[in-house]
Image (cartoon, rainbow, N blue to C red):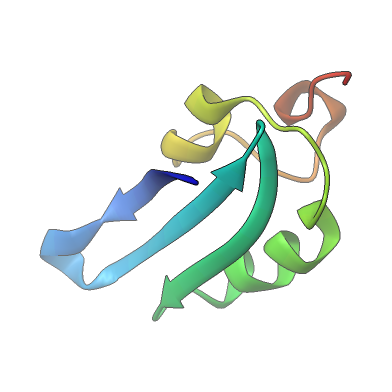
Length: 68
């Protein structure tokens, strides 16, 4: 399992995504309801880790996901 951090801990609004074999298996979302809701849709999907870590990327877009 490899973690991927997104958001800004200084503002106390962030999400810690956990991946196994490049697929989202869990998320800890702190004061970050958008990331929490998106994470439910990304569960089990392969995603680009740079997209997860970049707060400017809309995680709902296909660009954030990569093919298995």
